[in-house]
Length: 227
Image (cartoon, rainbow, N blue to C red):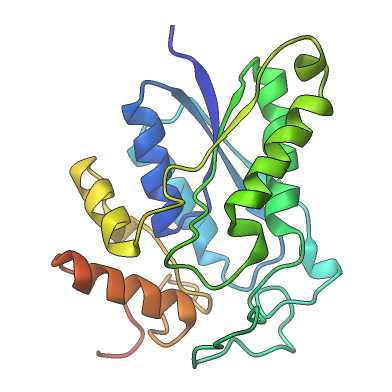
């Protein structure tokens, strides 16, 4: 039987690619998504489409409501999503502790499943400067996972897989395309409308569009306005 793995699946381009990679490596994939109070809820419907397309063993959506603490343009409607790059600073689209919380839930589910493998689509190359996308964070959380769990104490070795961490957006898109990812199913925009159409100007949209251009592949993104 295939080894189970928990795959964090947001519904965006990167997480869809990670799911494809995990499946190609022979894992039985359990997809985990979060309704964390994000203003771009269309990504959750995208996550369901991607999970169904790849035939995951099981998919879960967990509500955690990070909008209750706010502090991010993605969870607080009073903070505007920037339409220009924010150079040299951690942007207001950073969600406090998001990946820490997500990985904690993934770790709990992995332990219940008897899995020691968790996949997450963090990237330290074409990213927005988020501190919880860096290799140092992943290494620290992996250490925590092996110290803070019954399975770890009993000798299991948890591993946080980050197959995209050193790839450019173009390299990610090429890798996913080879593995059959339909990027038309995904939603990356920070301000996507209820139909999943992208704004075309936020940081996520700019990185995504530049990635398709650099990869030399057509961009299947649906935009609210003609580009």
